[in-house]
Image (cartoon, rainbow over all chains, first blue to last red; front, side, top):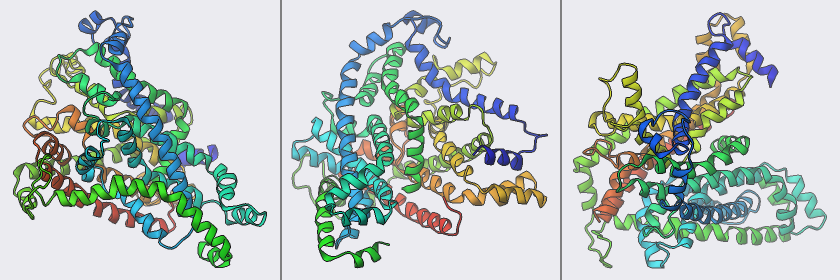
Length: 287
Length: 307
């Protein structure tokens, strides 16, 4: 890799015009521009409320946890955080389990009619959620699932399984046929081949899908906005939106609420940055 | 491979495979039928009735919703905003993404740090992004106007989201900020797979750096280019979160797109049939583009320039 990038550098760059240091200057400039909004949120959150009013843009000029406490208690962000976890964790587990099972079938267990069923699943990748979100509202209402945690979890799950199935199918398709055949010769049942032989080999795929789905469901705004209207189970995204409505812009607690919403995502991303970027890349390429 | 194995496998094995296969896809099929196919069929039904959300037997009105849609100046205004959004919001991240990826290509030190920083906005929730940028654009207390005044450009300062002729572009800048990191990371991974021998050879043949880029490097990353194009183009038709949060479609409809217009019709004005018809238009516009670009990408990939 190092060798090839060095050669790439030689091949593309004219050292007279664009040196390594000019590159870094440009990149650092871009990086600062990218980070300003995030830094603004963190800095504003950690200021004293007076400092927010008087000196809103000075970075880290004072320290106080008052904004965080206000958002956490008065702003009900503790409830929102709990609801986000209650919505995101089960829906992510469901997406990963359902997609892994379905992906295995569509990759390795042929039967008549399988292709047609696969087309129905993949159709969900093509049709935007908008198209059927309105009828889905009335359907949930008539099923008694509107404004309930299980209803929102099921809808979040359904938004992820088309991509998940497609994604896991690609991983199972890449495994060699010989594995399956030799296990069968050894007397393994089809279920054992799936769980003991194949499943352990797609760990990276399952990991990438888990992170990807977790982020998508944590960030989802439209599903709670539409299907959890009363606000009893409002997650962070919808809570943050409601927090801005109907009040004079109180920047300090708003910044704190924003920080509470994005912090889990940022931590997850930084800890698992390789898996996240690789997941998005292979997700895009396989999709 | 699968055909050969199917004919080789004994009947017992094939039966066992089919049995397990059917069991394993039961959950996905139930979910797809209940939460996707049934509401999708209902969407078609909603578009031909006059449904206000309460009436259990809404009257059949044929194609009246479609007639209304095509004669609705607000729909055309929203659609043209979608097209501006798609045009600017697709080209900018791709051009910026390619340029930054080229810059990063040969950087060894801190390249991971740059990648993490640039990708970070892409994984943030749209609500948080919209709220922070709404604050940056605030006419009185906003960071942007503050900076403009500080550098002597106070005359340019304005209510960025409150003026009809700049609001859409202000939101677009936010969307570009949020989306470019994806293009950067994807293009960078494609560039790392470029055949360097070819680039070297063309340099020896006397190609200058612009020619090397245009004739040697770009053709090799075209499939990835088209893939990013597909994702952003199709996403552009169903843009919702960021506009809904930042402007709600205003001021005076200046940032209204099909998504926000469909939402407000269905959930604020109780024109459920009409809102659904508008949402169907989003599908009708985006699906053919997705399929066409996907075909193109596949054809290019098969020509040996693998993604």
